[in-house]
Image (cartoon, rainbow, N blue to C red; front, side, top):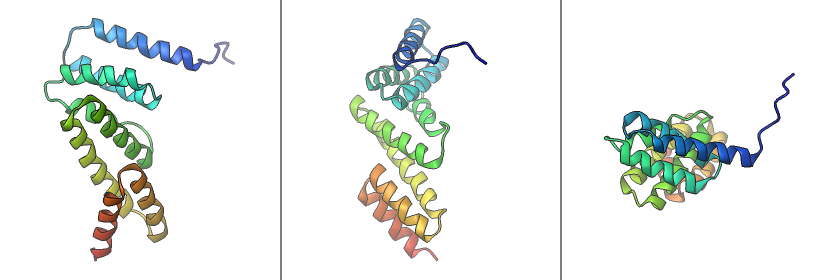
Length: 154
């Protein structure tokens, strides 16, 4: 039995801010960009948008192949397919706040690609649910395009 007390939400915020401060003290570079990208995604998952925006901005500044590292942190995160699609939506929205069309476009393209595959892998009744989810996460236009494409497929 553990004698360690559970962490509160406030402790979690403090820990993430401390991690950002630690990363900011490190020299810029690819390794720091990777860690900042992961911190941005974790902060975003916890709905700490200011922290996520700060970490993402610094990640993009450090990444010589921007926005690859940041997109990878959101794309490759743990979770089921629906959670991964939601994270890509989060990244697309974050890119809008950061005024980074390159990140927004990369996230949107990946979102459409992954959504199409996710919907196609389901039976007819599950597809209806998944299309509603895609409509909620992406847009009605994306969901309609996926539906039309799948209906035309043999």
